Length: 251
Length: 208
Image 1 (cartoon, rainbow over the protein chains, first blue to last red):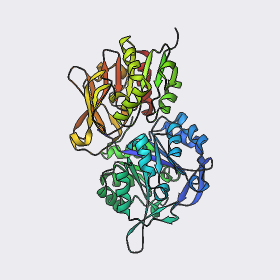
Image 2: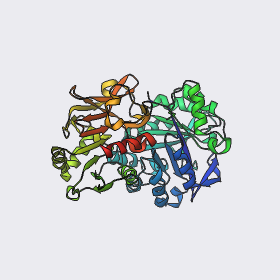
Image 3: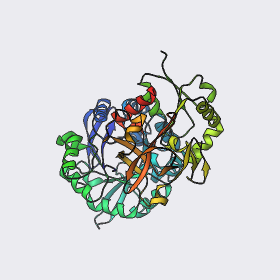
Image 4: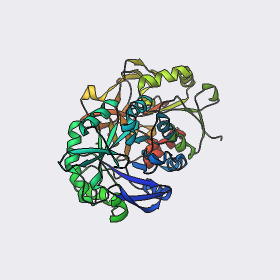
């Protein structure tokens, strides 16, 4: 039976792992290489690594990525600053399984389709950043939440589905780093409008939060802060889920 | 005894680097090339890849690897296909359009969505079913409840003349490990991404 996936998401700034809150105030958590090494020895089911400066600095740190892939024996998704097919190609050739495309979808709408054509759907993960506006409507953002898309969430999800993206990471910006739990409504909303597997992200503050979202039918979650600041480990979360009859990978 | 010499085929399809890194850490010599001429005195071939069946097969033919592989098999040597690499070992694929495969294993590769109406890709960690598990050389000394990393939207259906191990997605059993004549091997999942149990499979292939 297919297991649910617990995916640590690590934000990189320079050579450090950082934690942010609602996409702001990066605080250093540890050294990037040693943190990734630790996670790759644990029971993480995959890992997502995003360089939060790469998009604006226009510079992808290929050396660092190549270092990660040399010891990471689990599927690795790499994001941050991927603007062209060439960028995606270099990262995949360095040994990452998947590239995470977010902001570039808005500035280069053909990119997802191009990467899919060359490397298959399973190599492309779309990152969707969403926040509710004052009227209670979903708005989508890019460039670390700084820019608002003119497209509706429905149009965006339809477009990336059509372009062939293999998965969508659904980020609830206002929950990021807050430990308030996953955004169940947002998860259900996106899950209903697409067939693509969803990784729900942002807000995880406890093992109970993970149980709640899996009971809603999620099959993959991503979390960061909970591992660094709350003291939960991947194993403690998995054991709790297992006791509660959720199918997790224990070996 | 000299070290086993592995030929990893670079046919421009998806992620091959991680397999290369995995074997680099094992006791073998590995040649990674897109030119069959570089594959001198190769003991075992690795055919890895993600992507579409028709593209994969076309690239292999363009580079001249289809004949090279058939010749290698005629000499009684081993091949290990991973993910798309396993699918291409089959007779026919239906991804994008009907394409002939290497035909080393009798059977076809079809769409999960069209045949079973399930969400694709089948992505994540899954265990293997019990049937034939203990007969597989690749699975020697591997715990029955180990999980492996899968990501695919098409699955292989072997004809009845061969034994294989399945994995079950919802209600659909799909070919996950296949062996023929102790010579041709394949896994639908990615051993190189499946942590300890996966590395054991790669080691098992080296000593076969």
